Structures are given as C-alpha cells and as structure tokens.
Length: 227
Image (tube, helix red, strand yellow):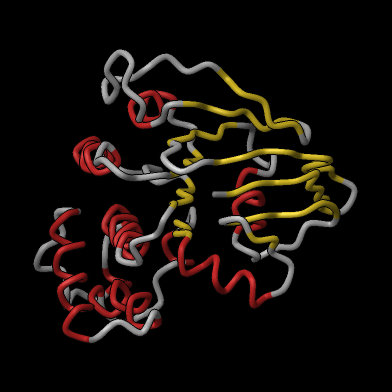
C-alpha cells in the first residue's frame, strides 16, 4: 500500500531520514515509536504529501507520488489523524466536521448523513451532531477527529498519538474499534501498552533509521492469528 524508496529528509542540519526503505502492506497493523523529534510525524506528512522528500520516492497504492495531483488521490484513500485535534477540526459543529470529507468525495447528502450518524455511534458519540466543536473537551475533540478519518472509509489510517491525553474508558473505546476486522493502520504512540494491544509489528525510528522491533502479541491477538 505504501512504500518508501531511498527516501531522505532533513530539517536544517538535522537528518531525519537518509536512504529510508520501508513497505506497508494491506492488512498491516503497525506501531511506530521513537524519541520526540525523531521524525515520526514528518514521516506521516511525507506520505500525505504535506512535505516533500529531498531524495528518493514515495509510492502509494502502486503509484509514484510526486505532484500535488498525485497526493490529492492519496488523501482520498489514506486517513491521517493529526496529533493535535485542533489541526483537524475547523467546522462549527461536529456533524459538519465529520461530513466534510465524504461530501468532498462527492457522496450524496443522504448517504453522508448516514455515514455521520453511524460513525459517531461507533465511537460512542451519538447525539453529538450539533455540538459546537471548539467547546468540546480535549478527549471529545480527539474522538471527533478520529470520526472524521473513519468517515472517509480509508484503505489505511495513519494515527498520530490517538490516545494522548485520553482517560482509560475512552482509550478502551479506541482499542475496541481498532480490533475491528478489515482495518489497516500505522500508529505513532509512546504508550507501549496501547501498542501491544493494537498492533502486530512495531518499528523504531532513530537517527534516520527505521528498524523492526519484535512485539509480543497483545490481548487482541490469538496464537497464529494475524491482526
């Protein structure tokens, strides 16, 4: 689904990647860890075309992505959850935020209303449709941000610290959702317990190198079962 081919990126004098090769396949449920500033969020932004690599290539769904037009197609099929919900939410109400993506895909309004309703119910947010977005709590904003991603029905999700600042019941709600069959995702998180319960494989990003870390199966996996 996503492939980095000798990708390179710097911020000033700081090297984030150099010759990075990495492949993410359909059905993968991957965790990405590393120190603050190691380039994890930058990696997501490169995949989405929000930043451009200084070397190498990015291939998504079998297509080399170079121009903005290429990444417009990527953004229709790859769902990015920003680390800060305030970067994701910009409409007056919850329903308008969740409906924004599907409407821009050209879906009929009746279908979009059903998607909004079903997505909010899935996250335990039924009845939030007319709530004013900027008045929500931090945890509620994070759940609504996730709803905006799910409403797009992406082929793969890139989730940047999806449980940061959440209480235990809300975190459990996200864990249960991520256990649902048929999902593919890449999660940045500092919460190793959360990753152990939601991912099959973990990678570590340090000094421009992406290396695999063996992760013991969490409660969401049974012996011999692929996440």
